[in-house]
Image 1 (tube, rainbow, N blue to C red):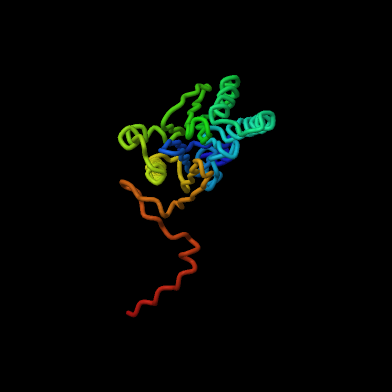
Image 2 (cartoon, rainbow, N blue to C red):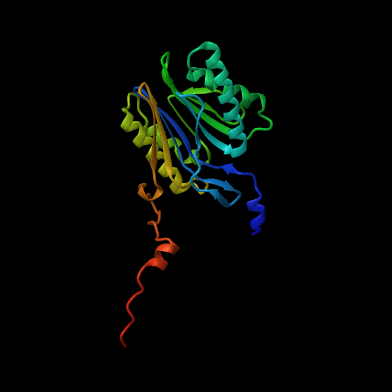
Length: 235
């Protein structure tokens, strides 16, 4: 295997991203693994990016493409807020993401989920997959880990969930994808957005539930080296 080929590959966020609506707001969630080919370039990246005070976007696909789309949309929304004198709605943010994704669909390799809360429509989730289609959904999943989750969400998602139920669902879903998808891993990050504001939460990988055939966490080499030496055997 040519290691240089993987080290020089484009940074890809083969990943798991999720957005879920609940009774009062939305919960966004993602894993934290960024890879270049088979090499994990960053095991603790933040894939949930702020667009405005009340709107965030989950990024998957090419890290560079998703970052530049987020940067452009953040800039346009800032100008929009100054001109109108009030925060942009979730729908406006999603339409801007869709516009950039669709107009550049031949060169962009990124799938995005826009979620947030505004005073006009409450909590909203919009999926913008490859190609720039805009889909409003009660929940959206994306990234390489999403293929393992469609049946789970069909069974587990329900209308009128509380904030805690929605966040537990997102964390469980991301941990399930991490267990099956080699391109998803690290920790689970969530963002809860509602009338009260925005709350970020962090769930370390060694605290996530283990699923079928997953191995228990192992001590690192440093832990092994720092541990006391075993007593010599008496013969």
